[in-house]
Length: 145
Image 1: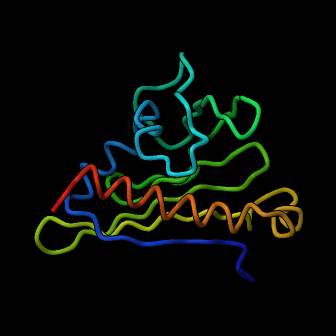
Image 2: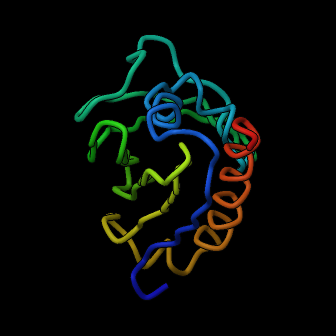
């Protein structure tokens, strides 16, 4: 964890375009969230994300709360990342494979956080790695081989 990132990768039996369609639609995020914290997209946000777009999500980790995100990395059908208020990022990289499959890598990156040491010392890197594993499994279940 010296890089202040945790990533997991899975092979999903569909194209990057279909996966990106889910990722670029905030209303779909609760379908794939393996952490159990993402509840719903807040009204008034974009239907489809793009570079610089902001979108709010209703969350629950103990008490319910709302979080505002900004898309900070965007390459159509290949890469999307959004930043939370503290500066940490959630990144998705999609690599096409033969047979219409995709290598999907999700990363929790706190190297860009305002207070990265606080995150490093917290349970979030370990818990987020577990959540990423569950998220990738849920994504794969949406597109069975």
